[in-house]
Length: 306
Ligand code: HH2
Image 1 (cartoon, protein in one colour):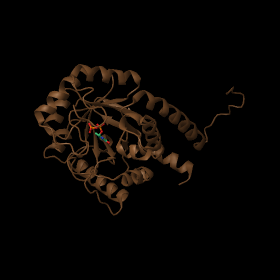
Image 2 (spheres, helix red, strand yellow):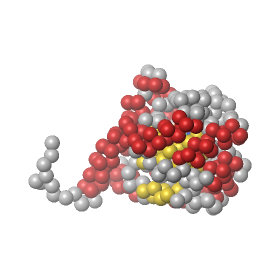
Image 3 (cartoon, helix red, strand yellow):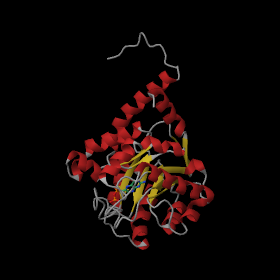
Image 4 (tube, helix red, strand yellow):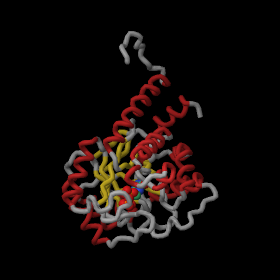
C-alpha cells in the first residue's frame, strides 16, 4: 500500500463513534484508560481494588488525557476463573457512580448482561465485552440503549485459552470471526456507528499470533469498523523485550504507536500520560501527512522552525 493510500484509508475508516450521550470523533487516536477494580489483574491487581483508590486513579487518568475510562471487575488474564455476578457488581458499580459525571465517557468491561444493564442505567456510554456479546441476553441488554459497544475476539475462555491456541491463518480467522459478531450485532438492531472491533491481543493467541496480528492489523480495516487495540503491558511485549510487567512502558508505547500506524483508532492503555504524549506526536505528524495527501499543505516558506 502506498503511504498516501494508507493514510487516506485510515482517515476514511472511522469518522465517529456513537456512544450514548457522547459522540467521539475518531479523527485522532483516542485513549481508553484501564481501571481494574480487581484484586488479581495481571499488571495492577489489587492497586485499585478499594473504591476510593479506583476513583482517584480514574480521575488521575482523566487529568492525564484519557478520552474514555474502562472500568472492569473481572480479571480476564490467562488462567483466571470467572467472577460471580454479585462480586463484579459490587466492585464496579460504586466506581461507575462516582465517575459518571467526571467529563469523559465511561466504559464497562464486562460480559454479564445484568451488569451491562445496571451500568447503562447509571449512564455508562460503552459496553466493552471481551466475549463480544455472546452471553445469553447480552445483545438484548445493549440493543435499544444507544451505547457504544466493543466486540473483542477471543479463542476459548480465559481459564484455558493459552493452553494451545491454534489458527491456520490468524489474521483471516480473527477477521472472519469479528465480521460474524459485527453481523450478529447488526441483526440484533445495534447500529453500525456504535460498533468498534478489537482483535483481542493475548486472548487465545501465542506471542507469534499476536505479533502477526499487529503486523497485519490494517487488514481488519476492510471490515469497515473502527479498531481498538489493547496491548498495554501484555506478555507478548514482555516476550519481545525480556522484561517483567512493571518494566514494559517503552514497549507499550511502541505498541500503541504501531497500532495507530496500522489503523487503530482507540488504544486501551494503563499509562495514560506517556501514551498521550507519544500519540500527540503521532497525531500531529499524521495530520500534516493528511494535509499533504489532500493537496492542502499551506505554503509555510517563511515559518520559523527549529
Ligand atoms: N484486555 C484486557 C481486558 N479487557 N478489553 C478489550 N477490548 N481489549 C483488550 O485487549 C482487553 C480488554 C486484559 O488486560 P487488563 O484489563 O489490564 O488485565 P486483567 O484482565 O488481568 O484485568
